[in-house]
Length: 352
Image 1: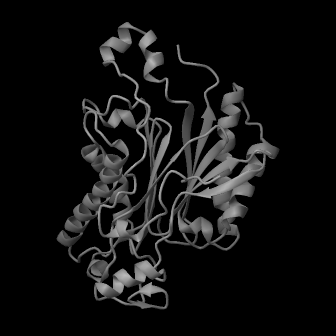
Image 2: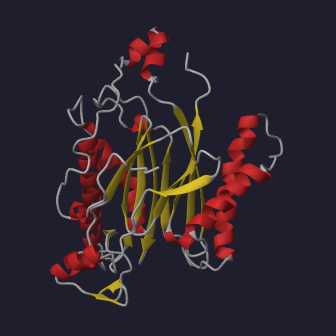
């Protein structure tokens, strides 16, 4: 099964222009939305409001410093992102918003912290208002603009410091709208989806594409901007070709324009995994998913004083995050390690 069968293949042109990646996608199913007061006074309308949301999501995260002297990663978990929109006029067919992100800092922690504090706020500012003709295209533009704005704002702040901050950060974020994932990334932090096959086996679906200066399109852009790639790094220094911050490399073709991909959740989806490269220095992708599934399916550890089956199950995801992050360090990763799991649970009962 092709996760992105409704999209053309990723195109490097996204780095330089507003391509029509979502140009001809069908509109999401419209659901008429009532005001808050109407929802409160008419509970039956709540069922209509959430009728096109089939899955519950809950995020869990673990951080490990590793052998580093400080923690340069940052993260955001917003299972209910709608609270950030307040009175803004979002499209009427949106019933649920969620947001998950990991930022892997380098040359300091400030770029990652700034992105964690501001990227989702800029997404709110850039989010399409009211009903739009092509929501997918508008959301893609929203994410690209929010990433660029966050980068510009950080570079302005960095330039005011004495000495000027050299910090940079990768990023991977997932904006969930109803049951649609919009995944944006810079650099080499990854987002993966665990999906079951017809035979009950699990497959790993990559939702991101690493941005390395060794890739042809990335290297070509860097060279056209007057930079060069030595020993697999920009100017022989920077390992990634897209990032927040890294002001000294912005004139060498390093950009903050994310790749953006879209996919729909299905009944076969089990969880999302977001992680910085610290995890991948200790685990291969397939190995990591197998490791997590062994905990979720086989061990199913019982949590002391758990009051319900749901609480026990929830804690299994917390345990899986903690164990794989710790084992990445034991397996040789000396970097900061941040691991985020987002549980995907099909709703068993309709809201009433």
